[in-house]
Amino acid sequence: MATVAEQTIVARTALRLRDGGPTTATDLARTLEISRTSVENALAQLQDAGLVADAQPLPGRGAGRPARHYGFSATAGLVAGVDVGVHSVRVVLSDLAGVVVAHERAPGLDPDADAATQLDAVVAAIDAAVATVRTPHGGLRAVGVALPGIVDDSGRVVASVILTAWPGVDVARLLRERLGCPVVLDNGVRLAAVAEHHLGAARLVDDILYLSVGARIAAGIILDGRPRRGPHNAAGDIGRLAFRGIDEDTGQIAWRTADSGEEVFALAESGHAEARAELTGFIDELARGIATLAMTIDPAMVVIGGGMSLAREALLAPLRTAVMRRIRIPVDLPIVAARLGGEAAAHGAVVFAFIRCADDVTGLPDLPPPPIAPLEDAALVAADR
Image (tube, rainbow, N blue to C red):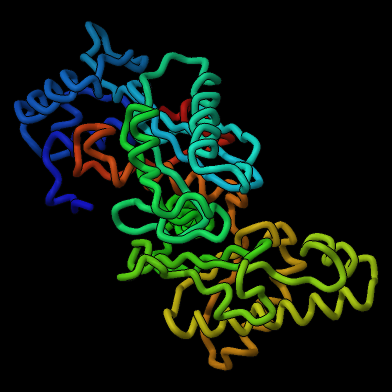
């Protein structure tokens, strides 16, 4: 991502209008510390690209004709983030300023269906989400897809124990042909970590360990503000290695006293002695794995996501104690619940699409991704703008 010094004047102008709201050419020149002529040239290019338009001036006290205001055309297009799984397909649609305008959930993919049928279901979910957007917006400019599996740098699925029909299929190309815009893919837990770093519990924290704890355990790692992939694109795929008691073939957590972690928690809270003992053992084993990973990468924060994060302090309080007992050195290591929960991967896929497809989204490859505002925050963001 380009630094401020490396950004073009056009990108700097677009960034100020996108994140700062409508303003005048004079104010832009003052804020960006460039000449008014440079600002006017940048505005002309942005208007030609459909990214900037005249904006209604704010009420002022001065007499005379108000100065011409310019605003970022957030509704010129849409960017989608899709979290694909067998339990659900979640679709998040954002405008070009990062405000989420739609958030839909469709049935999950049939794990026994072939790849073509599964891709049909993904396209149908995206089309249905786009159809819910009531205000006028441009078409899709890019789509990011989060999925359970290892994805290489080219966007091909290398391996997946859940979507077993996808490895070897050029999913990105097939979706691109169907949707008419660029499509990029990455591992869902990695993108969940991106979301928590970009707009969730770990904002402003550049070194985090994100752990998804649900039916399986997987990690996403952010180092120096960037998601860690590794030369084999497998960074974070540690569930079956770092945590004992997990099925070596499927990666699923094996429970004795109930069918799911949620049910084990419920039994433990009701006083079921065996469930309490199982839960205590699970948390201690989880702490052992977290301590091992934490002492390997030395994160500034651990974020717990996935279905079991919904237990909040019933999980986190004993987990913090167990982790620090394992580490045995005086370090400040916050362990917090994910803010976005099950919605993290879809929102991370939006961020990923903005980053990887910047040239297609805005024509400005040096324009950083916007601060994504989830749907519940969208009304407040729109009011501020």
